[in-house]
Image: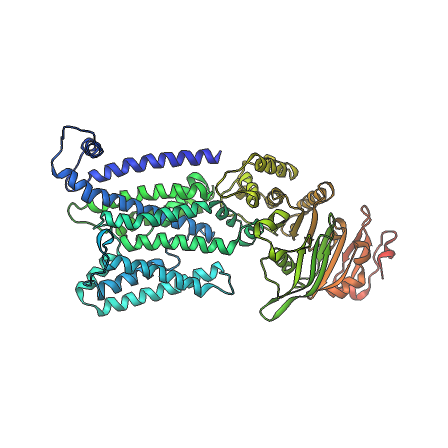
Length: 347
Length: 278
């Protein structure tokens, strides 16, 4: 019964996502109506049509809009899946992708890169060309999670409470080092760092999509593969062990997959909050707690949410773009409070 | 011989909680483990379910050391029901019981007819089939515990370990849960190792009792031989009166207030109760 409902939600979410992607790609300083958009897409795959659109429209679409909405989709997916998996692992609906310090670590990496080496070109040629900021942010995020994991591990086991505490501590430490950098660096770098940390998808291109995609595919596949064991984990660590789950292995797998998803997102989009917290919540209300449905459905819904938020971010104020992180915080914050309130009220 | 524990020592830090414990559970029998708080009962369960690594000693299941088994192999032979499993997430009863099939399921394939049949049997055996579609978050403590036993049965184990399964239940549910376990023990031949807090329930349901004190075996034997006023004084340090259960004939421990312990109050005794006195 639940399975059928889960499949229905997945289908509806997938269709909504396609619709939202097409609509979002048409919105911007140059409006491209849906009919033209479909026409351009059809032309691209070889159907010959009489163009009703301007010559620049296909260029705008392929070089700017599509990479941007696809990137928003991938980041929304990654954060929601990581958040859903961490909420299961910690059996705590307040967990989000950043509980293990990934965002603060990434912020530190990004800040270091902007403040000290932004002018240096990395020797990454051809298809993998990429500035130093995403790379350092990615490594910073992973480094923070690695440190947290090692701090918390005792004699081959990793107690979850220890992980949470170490996550908070390492996160604060990284944040205070970022503050130090902000204080001592020049004002231009300071602006760049602050802007970057607000989270945004400006400057998305196909290279970045190419970097992001493997992390998402791999992370989502691994987490869904372990979905059933993650379900058993919701009964508690010790019961899960007696039900045949190698719990220490499971913990490591979930942590690594979640950390890669999170670090990759933060590297390209900064620390966008609330998506990874709210979306799994919302989806759990729709499809129930079974991770085999929860995680894929969270991916689809998370993608819809972030694509919509990013479209608002780049179109609400006309030519001026608002960082999508701020949009998410302004919309997501009150929405989260509303869910929380509904949750606390007795039926 | 089925489950054997050989000179098991477990420590938390430098403190030994189990101190060279030996234990044997025969196939098809019901062994109850009793003892005061801190005597190492729960530590024993944690060591057997491998939540805790022993400092020394061996635990053998069917002659094979459990530390050498994979979690899946072990879960097919042994299921554990804890005191109280709170499930904060909105699973249905059926989904929870299906989780018991985890040690048999391959990650990529769905549930087979065999898995569904095992789940149905487990639901029926525990009388939870009527609850199958309900959410576990809406169940009472007794219902939830029955669901947890159903989940354990879905593992198709030959050994069932119960860690104070009735600790948070009212009396009617206590009896219901233990009756259920007795039926599984007698009719399905399930071997049961149960940590119990209540001496009288242990006496009523178990074939044999292990009385623990300070991480060691204090005494072991059938309830009739074991639950004596002297043994209970030795382990719990409190004076009690042991009479005979008027219906079941098993020993029955009567608690005495400090006042009546000192005054040596004479209790009205059921006939033959003197036989339980030392």
